Image (cartoon, rainbow over all chains, first blue to last red; front, side, top):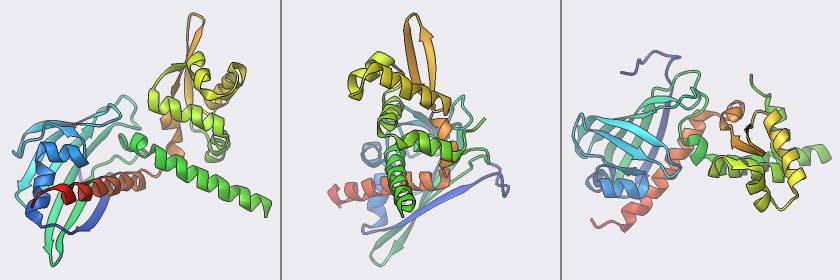
Length: 149
Length: 107
């Protein structure tokens, strides 16, 4: 289990209002062929204790286990990535919470359990590459402007 | 040992060097010859860039016979990366894909 001691774990929260009802969103979160369409290839089953893998396009494989499951309301699974380089090794839990709203559903994703020495997170380093390099370009361009000024 | 951020920025400021590094991140280990074939510059120039990348800790070299193989060490970028923001970026992108999917799905 993840020890939830302040300073030892970190949490990433991403929330979004989705213009679709919770029941429909739940299907996208729990049906393997739909999960593949927005997240990754997988052998997920909506059963507590079910162990499955998420396979990223970059070749990385995440080890996961369904921890909690409350239809149309919440879902959590472990999200672990074994890597010999501690900068990539990752033990975390991802929790999705669905709250009905007037216009659809508020979707909240919370990912918790990184170690403090962990500077990078699994394929974030890969998935985020393009974005990172683009940002680097922008930053470097700004630096050039500063120098010329 | 970590390379200070300003040295990493300087190393990656060169577009040819950045392209070489990005390619190694994307495609895995490559020989100098294979990298040269797509770099659009001469092999000595590629080798020079690879040495700069190596000295910054961004790539690792491995000698095998007469060939030198290079592989990316993206961990060297750790000083530049705020992982929480990066992970949030990952999920924002996944949520975009999720919304696209929901639009295509039947009720």
